[in-house]
Image 1 (cartoon, protein in one colour):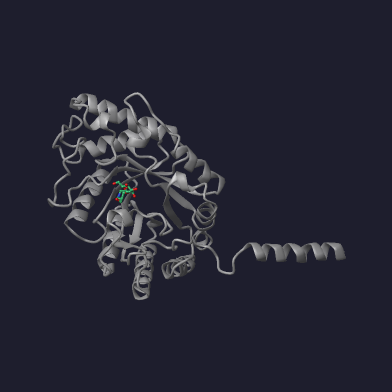
Image 2 (cartoon, rainbow, N blue to C red):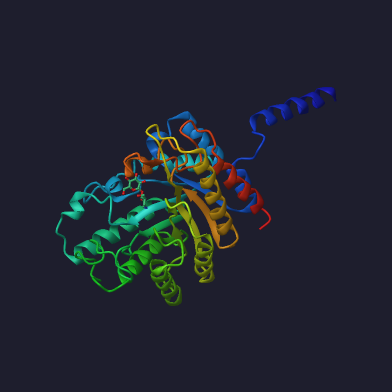
Amino acid sequence: MLAGYWKYVVLSIALAAASPISPSLRASADRGGILVGTAVRPEQLSEPAYAATLAHEFNLLEPEDAMKWEVLHPAPETFDFTQADRIVPFAAQHNMKVRGHTLVWHQQNPKWLTEGRYTPDQLAQILEKHVKTVVGHYRGKVFAWDVVNEAFDERVVGKFRRTIWYDQPGIRRARKGSSYIEDCFRWAHEADPAALLFYNDAEAEAMNPKSDEIYAMVRDFRRRGVPIDGVGLQMHISNLHPDIPSISENIDRFTALGVQVHITEMDVALPVDADGNAEAEDLQLQAEIYRNIAAACLSHPGCTAIQTWGFTDKYSWIGSHSKRTQGAALLFDRNYRPKPAYDALRSVLERSRHR
Ligand code: 9MR
């Protein structure tokens, strides 16, 4: 009897010591049925602090670059899944879901493709094979795909971006609006009918001409039975005063079409000094932005995932992209210490269990 009691006490102490006093992001999110995720890079998985934080805090991940064409498809007849195949088992081992990113984009494509002078027919075959091979390889392992990324032009309102896939030379559907995008969704659906298929874009978070175009495309796809399940709003924020009501209204109209919304690439870039440090005041402002965006998402049952573009300021695309003038954009600092933004996000996730 006594032995049993002491076993119980020792076990409780061990459990209490193993779990931090406040729940992790994922513990809070799990209770509300929410996905909280991050982009990841395979080369960092061998760093203990990186791997431990990732597994402890998130229930969703997405390869930041490892599923892009230049990595996965280095030669016309060669697919190389080595990098992404380090990430996907990590997710399975830690009971995390995987978003796939991305099957069709105008960047990070291999030279054999961009300089290959293919005809539209050849290109269509190449793209179909790529989509079906990649989605097929990860069938049952990747639960949601960014099928097409950033197909709308940010400079010319209402225009599709001029890319190898659309009209340079395009895949048989040159200048026929969204029809090349439709083909890609159909190919992906054939390869894994259970995967959720997303259209993902930047600068379409709020109500604006670009999000209007995307909305019109998604509405048309839904009406005609094109297999689209969701819209990814990237949420790279560098203006510290995002229009939250407008973002909320945009989420509202997409979810009203019956598709899910995922926040897919959130970060909030701050001005930084030469050492990469931001002002304390800006870190508070950043926390409020994370709080407000998360709350806007979670106020809609159809907004089901909040994902950041990396989680530690040690590794973020913002530094090199801004020539080191901006940074500190994520939830953890360079030493994996949670920032005010982390606490803000967690408090919203905590409340989400009542939604
Ligand atoms: O974070 C990615 C970075 O490592 C790459 O060098 C870059 C190439 O353009 O792409 C970054 O990720 C982008 C994502 O795939 C699509 N949306 C914009 C992201 C930031 O540029």
